[in-house]
Length: 212
Image 1 (spheres, rainbow, N blue to C red):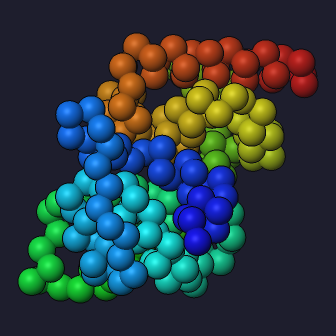
Image 2 (spheres, helix red, strand yellow):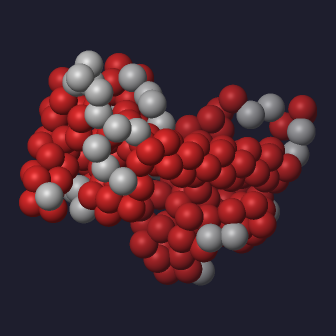
């Protein structure tokens, strides 16, 4: 059964990250296999069709390992997608003589899940801290917007932002990541990141003004 038919939107989005191998402009696909190890050999050669089989064979175990850590179905699916993107991008570096590909994938899945738990906890702690802060004369415009909110208003206001602005606002003000590091993480020009932060702050400032 097709990976796309089996897993729907998640798999379709995942496969959009995968560039098929090409030879003289023609997509090259290896004969599909029915074992994880055999499929992964083809994945290491850049075979997108084999990656779909690899995903079908291993996705349930990867998702299960993640779900046992996160216990949130939507978040678990999101992290599973990140895991398979990482598996595709690092496939060529995997050495089968040093370990089993399934165990390697599960290890990555658990690490990603634990990282997500830590990030979510960090965000909650940061939101609580921001809600307890008050504006001081030395605070800049960005600090004034965020620091003047109570905890519930922080969550509500940030949630209303467009996805691209919300992402950089959370990374900057909740995770405390510098703009240059956000640009590197998201693969965006620094000016784009700063523009999204400014746009998000303007929307937050406008919302705060309408609530007071």
